Length: 210
Ligand code: C5P
Image (cartoon, protein in one colour):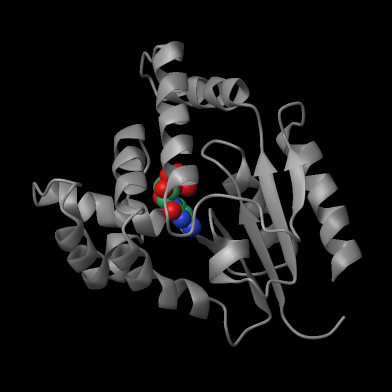
C-alpha cells in the first residue's frame, strides 16, 4: 500500500453511515469528520439568531462565519436541527463555504474518513475507497424511533418515517451535490445487517481496495 487512505462514506439519514465511518476511522487509526455536523452547526447559528432557514443569503453568511467552537463539544443532534440543516444544505453558497474545510481535512496525514452525502461525488472524488450505506426507509425510521425513545422522548413512528422521507426527498432532489452513490462506490444495504456485520463487510472491502 502507498499514499494516504481516504475513505468516503455517504448515505441517507439514519442509514448507519456515521457509526460505520467512526468504526472504520478507529480501526485504521484515521481522523474522522462527520460532515453533517457542519450543516447542523449552520442550522444552529440561524436558529439562535432567529433567522428563517428560507433566507439563503443569511444562511451563506452564517456558513462563512462557522468556527470550531460551533461544532466541537456541542450537541447538534435532533430532528429539528437535521431538518433545518437539509434546507440550508440545498443552497450552493452554503455548500461552497463549507467545501474547503472538508476538502482539506486530514490532508497532510495518513488519510481520513469522511461521512456525509456528497463525499464520494464532490468533496473527495479522489477517495481511495467510496462506500454508500443504505437501508429501507422503514428500517431507518425504526432505528431513529428507537433512538428517540432511548433519549426519553415519545415519538410517533409514522411521523418519524414521514420526516425521514421528507429529508430524503430534499437531499436527493436538490440541484447541487444531491445525495447519490458515486458510480465507483461500493453499496452496502444495512436493512438486515447489524452494526458489527456492516463493519466487517466494509473492513473487508477497504482491505481489498487499498
Ligand atoms: O448527516 P446528518 O443527518 O447530520 O446531516 C444533516 C443534513 O446535512 C442532511 O440531511 C443533508 O441535507 C446535509 N448534508 C449534506 N452534505 C453532507 C452532509 C450533510 O448536504 N456532506
